[in-house]
Image (cartoon, rainbow, N blue to C red; front, side, top):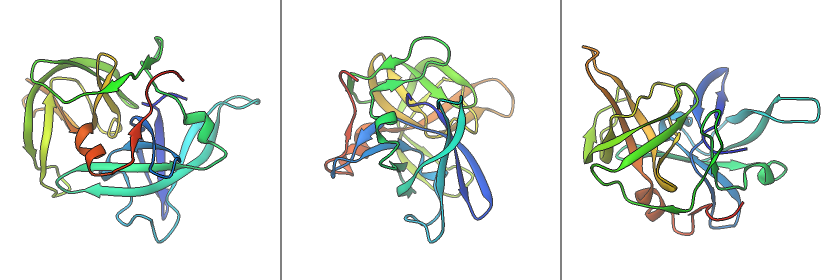
Length: 214
């Protein structure tokens, strides 16, 4: 399955729809995916179950399956989480592909910094594969959860709740993870804020994005 797929986080009877970001390998060699920190439960590893459920292919057709759980959550100045896949599901997510929602999946070949004016596309569970341009970098945001995020980048790519955590690409290069955004109250502009991927990798030695051949 490609990155950019929908998942549901369940804990204590509460559910949250978000999107898987880029597939990666952690320092121990385990298959993981990145996503948004605000999608994860408050405590990670959680005191109770915080299963990640996804619709996955099977011999009998698509099925909703528990594929892993959160291994890390950062929801403050940065916004990212790390999802550890169960060993039986690791081969399903050990690829460098991003869903383009109907067209051919996009292969990730590297990682790059966000640059103003660069073209970008994001893959999200709710609004799909949408594209635009990076309009600002080193942005400070204050989302409704009270966090103060720094070092974010802003784009004019359409996004909405449910797209959080989704991969943001510039051509074949991984650049960030969807953090938030939407349409301003006047309906005049569209904006998306994203967490730069290079900062996530720098904060997690040994973590590497899956690139190259699948």
